[in-house]
Length: 325
Image (cartoon, rainbow, N blue to C red; front, side):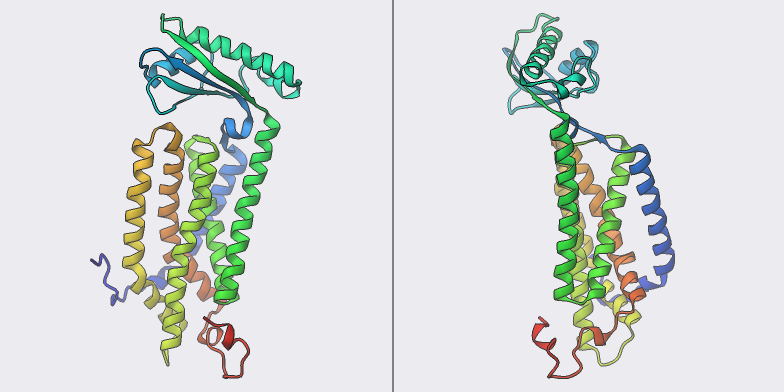
């Protein structure tokens, strides 16, 4: 099944200038949103109390949230633990009495957590519901800050590793184009997510790393076709070769994007609160990554001056020949 004929000759590269301008504007807007508005970090990154409760009879998440909101715990995250009687409640440190816990010792931190757990239990039993506390823990803000730093380092190492791999497999222009695309895709994806005002937690960070991997996979497929056509063509300008490469891989790009979107879309729509952020970021990233494979990565290659000579050693004695896959 082909949604886009491989022998099509759509002139995608004719749109390279407006597409690069639009991409640059979107990157600036995304960076502004991230640095001015910021991300709404969840308990994983800011610290707070984690309380597990057990109900004698099945309970609804909506009812638990309503009880917590009325008791002065706005924004508390309630997640099911596999049954309708066991739930995990996460409360950010902005609640009164929780802010000072970070600077307190272990005993004081435990006492504060127990106090919050008691308040939660009181809120949940107001309606006469039979509920008990199974476990209560506290995550300090310093731990959350460390996770944020480690997450940023992980993203940077992934991008640098991709650059090194593509530099060895193809040529430095491909590496630069791929890294520019990764920065473009990640920045816009996180910027759109920040605009939604949703909580950025560990599943969201995992989704960002997954977006980086998905996006580079799209680029490598197109880059492989660019190399194949360059080597197979006796004549042909880079402009024409890049267009042919995009057209011949477009069906695969669309089908991969659609099938992956079906999978992560399921996580977003029916996966519950624990997987909503992961699914949403993946959906945004797939859309952005697919567009950048066509309208950003290849125009960057053309702008950098890619040519057949970059992929074909001039003589058989050229030491690069042995390194070419």
